[in-house]
Amino acid sequence: MDSKVCIVKCKTYDPYEIANSLRGTFKLLGGLSKFVNRGEKILLKPNILSARPPESGVDTHPDFIRSVARLVREAGAEVIVGDSPGGFGFKNAGATYEASGIKKMCDEESIELVDFDKAYNVNGIPLAAAAKEVDAIISIPKMKTHDLMIITGAIKNSFGLAVGMYKADCHLRAPKPKDFAKCVVDVFECAPPRLVIIDGIVAMEGDGPAAGNLRNAQLILVSNDCVACDAVFSYLVGLPPLSIHTTIEAYERNLGEADLSKIEILGERLEDEELSDFKLPKTSLLLKIPEPILKLIGKGVKFWPSIDKGLCTKCELCANSCPTNCITIDDNSSKINYKKCISCFCCFEVCPHNAISIKRSLLARFLGG
Image (cartoon, rainbow, N blue to C red; front, top):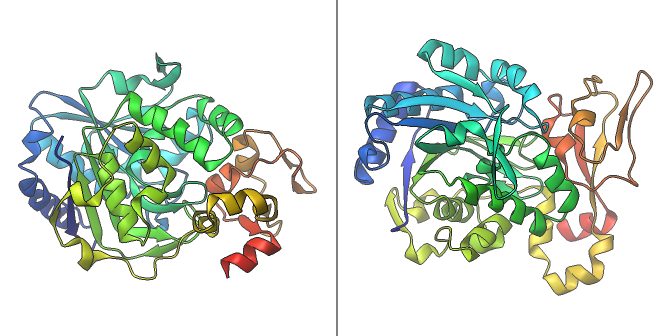
């Protein structure tokens, strides 16, 4: 596979502006017909993390999905949309689809919106049955930072294809980022997308994927290679591609290209679109410390979630999403049992009220500045 990543500018979420940007992108890639055949059924797999409005920048913007869907239909294919939101189950899907504007968009466009409530087994992994019922998957991630994986892009977006409690189990048996990346790539390898289109019109920096700061990056990344796309994403935010555990793991399995010198960049020049002073999550400190030193001081460099009782509405989403059941919510308090907490930050990701923040040890603060 010749790995190509097209970088295109797009200033707003106006569906017509997005469509025009994407048409130019597909032309550079040889046409959308290279990826979508007439009569096919295509699953559009966005990043729908939690029940937030479109302006929050947490989920793939509904008008971005709308534009992709229209173009795929123009190419003669049928489209469906689906994801499994944060929370380790499909029970959250209805409320998340509603709040994110995805349901409204699908209703307006007469697009089937599917719940990932049925699964089929691939190498012991329960994948959404919808992935088997379509001819191809187009991944539509959001350009964001990620507390555990540092960035969440093309490879990580495929993790949403796993259903039921499988994701929770991955956090339990692989709490360390390097090990968890293997679980993510396991899922990615089972059903690699035919095409990835990253929504970076409004990106998220800082402590993503839900509580970071919005940034008008005004970019769309399109690629036939998810690994290459993440490599370019990493470069744009100031990170060496092979500093990201998911990229390393996928590259070592020959699932895509991570060497920038071997990736054909189309559209905008890579050097011109670097996002200067892009803020990474606090946990990115772990990338800066050489592994031998980290082994020596690792116990002193700690990160953990903390609940702000003043902001907590006791919705219990955090407790229901915790793989170790270490969060207790009652009328009087909201508590985390730190003896059981594995710092997977699932609670931090799903809290719709930003009532959970990431705290760091004194040494982590000293080293991180």
